[in-house]
Amino acid sequence: MAGKSLKLYGLQHLDILRRYRDIPDRALHDMRVVGQVLPFRVNNYVLDELIDWAEPDEDPFYRLTMLDRHMLDSADFDALERAMRVGGSAPVEVTAAIHRRFNPHPGRQMTMNMPELGGSGVSGLQHKYAETCLVFPASGQTCAAYCSFCFRWPQFIGNRDLRMATDESQRFVAYIKVHKEISDVLLTGGDPLIMRASVLRRYLLPLLGADLAHVTTIRIGTKMLGFWPYRFTTDDDADDLIALLEEVVRSGRHLAIMLHISHPRELETAAARRAVQRLLSTGAVLRSQSPVVRGVNDDARIWQELWSREVRQGIVPYYMFVLRDTGPRAFFEVPLARALEIYRGGIRQVSGLARSARGPIMSTDMGKVAVDGVADVGGTRSFVLSYVQARVSDWVKRPFFARFDDSATWIDGLQPLSSSDRMFLARPEPVVARIHH
Image (cartoon, rainbow, N blue to C red; front, side, top):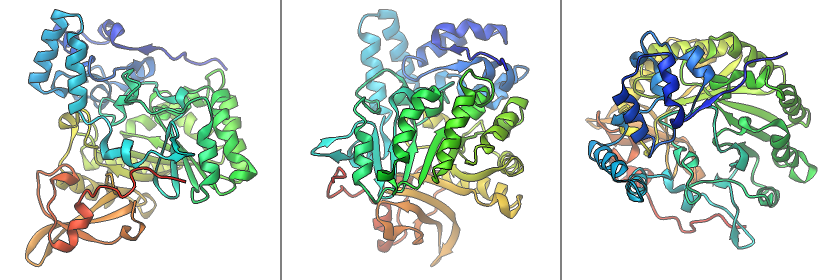
């Protein structure tokens, strides 16, 4: 069955927006300036079926995909605008300086998570937790549209020094083969499902061999359901993709499709509903996760509706994240106290089946930290925190405390309540920066 064709629009296509809205020249100019720093891509499905052009300034998908001058510090914006007028190497130099200040690889992931095999690094892998290994397929380091808050923005700006991706050697398979502690492999990006099924097959089939029997779970992170659901229904290799996912399930592996769903409207279109049913037919488990983002989903009612709708459609709510400390987070971030209010406000209005959603979660260099609540501890108002996953496995689900701060947006803004809480909030230098075999 023929379907819509994916049409991708970048900075050079900004005039396409005039078809939908009378956008002032100044606004397009501002987007072009910010686009020197942050990646921009949108597609015809997002423009035609998700953004409400009657009120774009209030629309979550407009905010989710479009660039805004306030994503940059005003001094940085002005410096870059001047550099663009000068031309030559000036814009490149200013952009590079902004990128460095934007903390391109949060959580020390390029020093603490990069594994080695035979004395040299393995391209396109991260191994942070013993049982879980992340794989960044080279052909999957792009998306059908870019979320403007995305913490993986360095993958999309064309800087090879900042980008994580596998090489052509398939050394990632050799690494996983010898690390028997790895039970879960996560294909991530970018978006692995933007790859053609024939390319994705080259990554999945080696994981199904008898010599990798210790790999019992395969996860695939994707935003395609929200930004291009036709990937699973009418794309010219959609049937091949579905057959490949069925093959993974038949191998006896648990297949989890980790859906990045930011707003319930992503599940409301007819195309998305058909895509969910197609994915469920493979035998895969669908799980959803997203950060809480100011101006997109920073409302308890949105999360209540999202989690309820997901359960009705067969999707398991998984994580509500806190935005990582990278990129234009000042434009999008929500204080931890507010994120907790949003989480509690949403979770208390859903059935037990939807309370599988955990949050708010900070994915830090030492692990995933949950903000579990606020309590009076010895007369001091405090955040109650715990690790749901940690480099130090003994830390998992051990409660610890930080002084309450209604302005803190990340773990580095928290102060330990006592000396016994200090180690959970510290950032110790690792004894061994890389994981060796």
